[in-house]
Image (tube, rainbow, N blue to C red; front, top):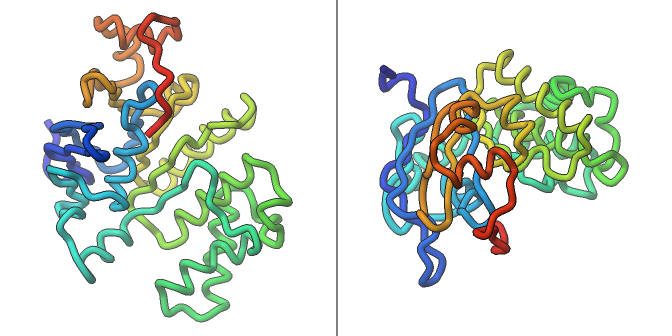
Length: 260
């Protein structure tokens, strides 16, 4: 049984609403320190909505989100900033500043949130680029590198302030199979070497099987979790809908609702 010290994120009774539509209702789960935790599900199930609530971009209609036992929903001022310093985020498209080199993109948060001198900022940025295999690319602009390299650079920027938790939004989306497998290897290597917790939104089954310690599967009809556990456990789940997803079978219930 897990002790409280094992839990780094605790979501309790989360309800997320867009306008008059409830996307997630009374959602509760926890993330263990140091694990690779994946949020998956079909289109429109609320994966991205959940991620944006967990990183503090959206405020829930009800419930709380505890990071190291501190509630990001109610925290304000310096307390909120202290919580946000514990997390790093890689958005699906990378969200790098196109007019800045990779090195400049990594130095920016260090300039904004630390008092480090320029040479120290440059050293930390270079170290993080090296961790993701981009040690010779710091002088390049985002437009001058491949999509996979942009995602690696975005992960490096997410790590540059030394967070305890790194959120990745669809890290394998749009990548070819080889580059996707290399991304999986990078995530596993960083998790093992740095000891950070990864929370990943994904629907890429090969990647989920390769990297996830534990998974929750969301459903837009249930407005919550329909299955949780290791990927292999979900693959053998008795729920037909869960099996259909993991076996990649088409069904009458296929949704065309866009991701939220």
